[in-house]
Structures are given as C-alpha cells and as structure tokens.
Image (cartoon, rainbow, N blue to C red; front, side, top):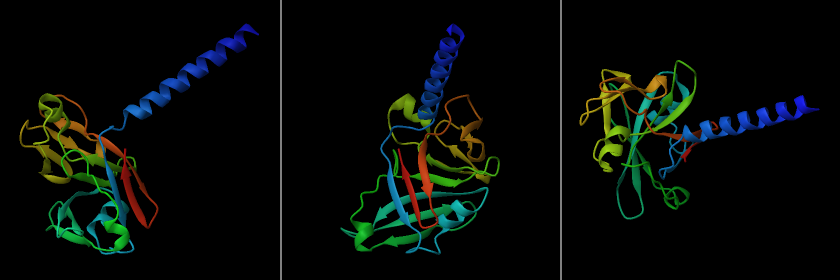
Length: 185
C-alpha cells in the first residue's frame, strides 16, 4: 500500500513539472493574429506553414483607418502584401508580439510549426525596449539581431546559433487548420 502512495505522489509531481515546462516554452507577451487563408490563397505565409524549412517574417502596416496589410517576407524574395479589407478581418484586433513582427514557419528538424516574436529576446531583457527587430541572416532558417550580433536558428527551436550565449527566441502558440492561421499566447 505504501509503495502505491509513493508511486502516485511521484507521478503527480512529474506531471506538474511537465506542465510547468510546457508553459515556460511560450512567452506571455500579448499576441493575437488570425489569418484567413481562403481570402489570401496566394500569400507567402501559406508557403511558410505548408513547407518545411520555409519561414516568413510577418508584420502589419495601416492602409487607412479600417484596413491594413499583412506584409510577408521570405528570405531571398521580395516582400508581398495581403490587404486585410473584409468586414470580418477588419473587426479583429491584431497584435504581432512586442514589435509588430512574427516569424512563422515549419522546422525541417522536427516538423513543428513555430511562431516566434521578431524582437530579440536578449536585447529586450537587457533594455526593456523593443528596438531590436530580427533580420534574415545568411539563409531562410537563420535570423540575427543587429544590436547584439546574436544569430538564431529558426529550425532548432530558435536557439542562439552564434554570438554570446543567451535566451532562445520568444515563442507563441500557433494553430493552422488548413483555412486559418491563428497565433496567440
């Protein structure tokens, strides 16, 4: 009987530790992004969620009071714009992380779909400012911070690939059901 209680206690503690680790994997910074792929079926963002080793930097810019565009950049290509103009889309509030930018794509290493904040996590931690957006570095699976010179590997969970050791990229939850891409915290 005593062995059973010990085993139950141990399993409970392991379960709690596992849940805490999963929660620490994602940032708590505000992020809300919904993208209807049926309205934008030629978007480069679709390439990023459907192809391995393709990542896209997504940001928004206003077009008028009620409409805006989602700007998608894939390494080695020109930026594209998807105008968000339908009633349903314009009623939604979009917050793309700390500095109006997400990096979305699927890792070739583990086939996982990722959504990272475009803000350098180490510069944000050091200054509490959002003035260090990441840019493409050498390939479509690497980004760098021009402020601290760290390079991050997108296909390896956003870890620091070169430069001073530090935090991995901030990660958001992402869902893609074939129609909608939803990113949130």
